Length: 516
Image 1 (spheres, one colour):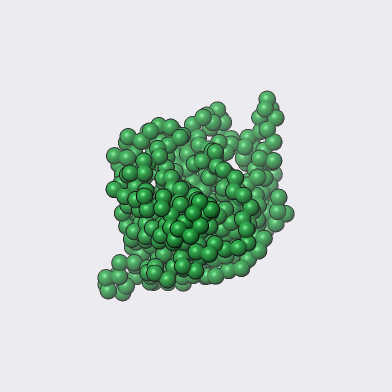
Image 2: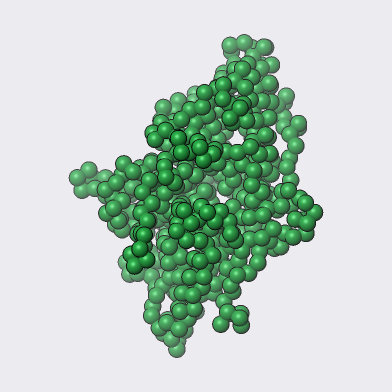
C-alpha cells in the first residue's frame, strides 16, 4: 500500500470494517460484484488485506474535457485503431449518435486493415478480441432483459440492425473476435461504469456514454498497476473466464502505418480542453460500487433516511468529506444523496469551503423515480440548513474522536466569540451553455454537465461514473478512481475552471447581501 495514501486509507478501511448497516451486511447476494469488506469472525476475513487490493499506483497520461463525441474521436478511437490484441469497451447507455457512428467506422477500418494482413499472412495473424459491454439501450430492452448475472449476448446477425456496428462477415475477414454483452437488473440497477482498456496496457475512464447528448464530459488516461486492478473489476462483472494474454512482443504489427487515424474527422467542442501529462507513480485507489436491487425507499416522511451501502466508492467519498480541512469541490449532474448533503453540511460546520456545480432540471423524471425528490429541492434544503448553521451554537460538523479526520479543524479560522470554527463558505452554481456558442447553432456546445468530479483540499481527486445522487449511492453499479496528487488536482481544477468561465450561473453564494 502506498504510504502517501495513509491519511485516507486508514479511515477508509476503518469505516469499511466497523460502520456497517446490518441490512447490507446480510444481503451480499443482492449486490454485484461483492465488495463488502466487513471483518467476519467466522470466516476470518481480513478487511485490510482485501481493501489493499484496490490501492495501487498509476501513470497519468492525459486529462480531457469536451463532449462525448469530441472525447471519443480525439482520444479513445485513435487508441482503439492502434490496438494489437484486445479492446475492452464498457459503457452504460448505447444510442444512435455521432459517437456510435465514429466507433463503428473505427472498427470497420480496423477490420479492413487487418484483412490486408490476413491476405499476406493467412492464419499467422492473431485474432483481435473486442468486447463491448453496456447496460441500457431502450426501455423495451430493460423491461425484458434476462435476470441473470450472465447477461445477454447479442447474436452477430443483430449487430448492424440493433447496435449500429459492422457486419459479422466484415469482422471475420479481419480476424476480429467481437462480442457484445449487456447486463441490467430491474427495477433500476444499471451498470453505470464507463472505461476503455487497450491491450491491457492503457485505460481511459470517461464520464460519457456511447450516446448522443451534448454534455460536458471528462476523461482521464492512465497506465500502470491500476490497469490490472481495472481488469480485475472487468473480470468480476463481465467476463469471469477472461483469458490470459501472452506477453506482447515489442515489434508493432506491420499494419500500424496503414491504420493511422488520418481518415477520422475529429469532432470539436467549444468546451474542449486537453492536458497532456507525464506523471509517474501517482497514488491511486480504484473505487468500485456494487449494484443493489433494493433501493431501500422510505415512503413516509417521518422515517429516517437509510444508510447507503458500504461500497468502496461510497465510503471513500464519505471519508473525504469528513477529513476535508480546507476546501471541497463537487461537480455532479444531480445532487440528491442525503449522505452527501449531510457530509457537506458537517464540513461547512468545520469551516471547510464548499463549491458545488450541478445541473438544472437535468433528467427530472429519473430523479423523481430513483430518489423521490429533485436536485432543486435538495439544494433549497441544503441552503436552508446552511442558514440554520449560522446561528447555531452547536458543534455540528466537528470531527468525531478516534478518526483520522479528528484534526480537520486545526488549520481553520476559529470564531472565538462563538467558541467554534467559523462557518465555511458555500457556493452553488448551475451549469448552463455558453450563450454565444449556442446562438451560433454549434451542436457540440454542452447544454448540461455530465462530469463527475470531486476535489478535496486541492490534493485528492475523484473521477469516474459515480454521481452524487441517490441512484449512484444505492442501486447503480459504479466505478470511481481516486488520485492523490496536488499537481493533478491543480491541472484538473484549472482546466475545469477555464471551461466553466462562461458556463455557470450562481444559485447561492454565502456572504452576498441577498443571501444573509
